[in-house]
Amino acid sequence: MRIEFTNHYLRRKIERNDYIVPTNSWKETRVNNPTVEAVLRKKGKWFRRFSYDEGLTRVFCIVNNLEVYCGIIIPESNNNIVLITTYYPYSSKMKKKLFPRGKENFEPFDFQPTIKAALP
Image 1: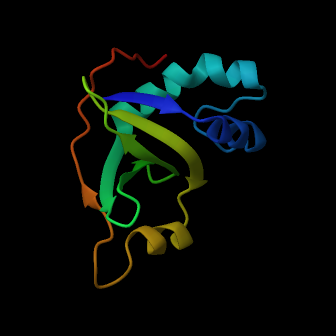
Image 2: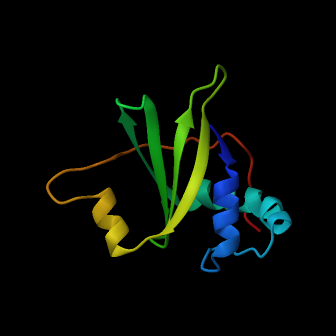
């Protein structure tokens, strides 16, 4: 699976300074995307849910119980693309949204790393 990032994610990353990999500009964010990808692959816990209404598979990745990266899976002929659309801090409000009492909203899945990404 390949990981891609949207412009909305890039803009939100610049606006917030509480990221594991903080950045101050668009250029710096684009340069640090491989580092963010490596963190998601190495330290992230991945979950997914198929939405029958939209026909999409929604995913989210929790990193160190600090950050939640949300996105969708785009099927491609060779392999799938995970498109990260936004980020949220991992708060109790976010935890209740993702894991409401009495039922599981998402199922865990094993994210297979296919791109060589190294942490600094």
